[in-house]
Length: 138
Image (cartoon, rainbow, N blue to C red; front, side, top):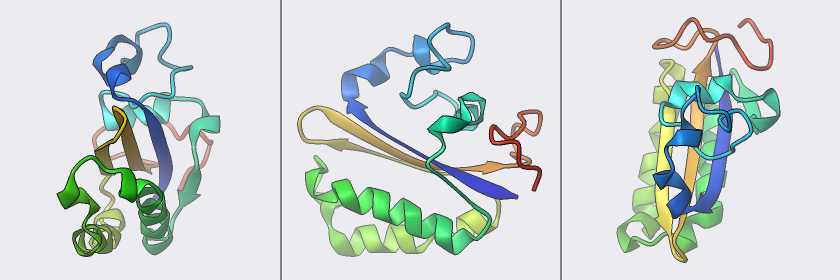
């Protein structure tokens, strides 16, 4: 098993258009907005993958870097708290090691939204029928 990393930063208003976030919609494969179901990231083109890891610690480190890059712009003061954020990121290794998806989403100033996801692959435990977009088998 491995995890693929995906992140999206865009207009919070794009999240309200759920059509392109559904696999049957004609814009789904080309849209970089977060899918409604996390496993559906695996249906997007492999070029959307921002990293692939079989080591849970490396995957969690990537997730933490992505979140910290935008943390100063989080709309919620509580979400910006460095200690709290460090605790959340610190617990990710266990979740990744157990084969879970790790999904984070934050509203940012300027009506923006950040999504950072680590999606389990080969197989995904809820959607084992979805093959790896990068062609990996482990």
